[in-house]
Length: 398
Ligand code: LMR
Image (tube, rainbow, N blue to C red):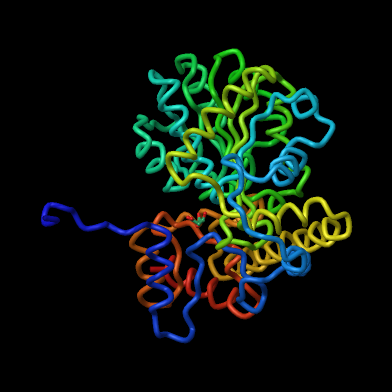
């Protein structure tokens, strides 16, 4: 019956993380998956989250089905986090938000919606992008293309080429953009570049689709929402999927949201209705527990303050690891510029290492990174950063 089913080729990130777990070498180092580990190499349970969970559990209420679109307090808190409570887009009711199963769930609901209601549209993703973006949009039946983004020569951005490509797209093309902390490169647009990009998106009648999975890991919670707020203020209609997996360290709770900023409240109601239909025929409604933890952290003033402080410390630790990695590599490999580790932002950096070098690092030194050369900087800690840099230097030296 199933002989014709092709074997799963594995996932470039999740399967690598599974291989790491099976590796018996005690000195192995995991820089593969986008998870924040603390300086002891553990996934932290944030104090704000622990306290919020205790409050949720203490309420001891029943566990009904949530509405298809998710819990109202969660959805409102998400809108306030993304845009600010006083933003005109929020107060005028022109944002349609659903609670989703991680931001991946939100991305997919949005992709299904676009495939249904924008049949002629194709998707444009950055070159490169998170591996799963292409799979998700193609899985929804959409054709996926790339626009220029990462400049391997400088470790920076091909901004002019990116703009030129986007200027040439047909109206209603879907443009996937990383709102901050670009995955996999760590290369972000500056505010000035967003200011140049937004008129191109608006005047070309393109449909931006923002992925905001790392809010707070770039320059700060508010700062990382800049693109979303600027697009909303510019009157652009767009999609934004956001995640709490990393920012609250609640990976397995699968907490995210999809918001669609619409021209007016009437259209937002139409969009919300069809997003609900998409959810209903996929998984019916989102889970209750994690979303209530997130909503409690976001809305309780004391917990909110603690969360912002804790997230700030995580961001600072990543920056410290960037500095240390850069210092050791610069000393050990003179003549090569590693400055991009200092300018790139968020959990990820592109090391510029080739696939063969990545394989050698893993096989010989037990250092796991994605075969594209992406490292999760948040996997570095004071106990392994030196060893990582030494191993990278050895492999780069051939
Ligand atoms: C990553 O990019 O490593 C994370 O977003 C985890 C994932 O699901 O791929």
